Image: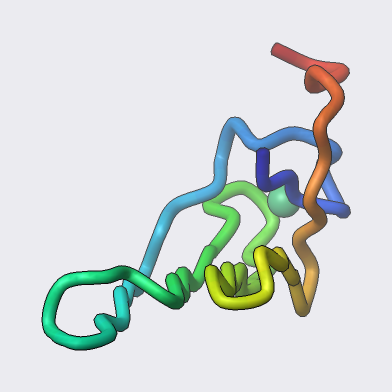
Length: 71
Ligand SMILES: [Zn+2]
């Protein structure tokens, strides 16, 4: 789950840009999503690399497996 580090909730996050990269025309090997928090204006990016099975976030968002504090 992607969470805004400022607001500590994913509730106001909006995907502003989403890209999926293909390999050999069919396999998704990378997903890139840009997020913007509509509450505080923070922005961040989430990238998933299927080749390495890695997730990464940059900017004012964070990746969490926990349930949000404010649902
Ligand atoms: Zn926020």
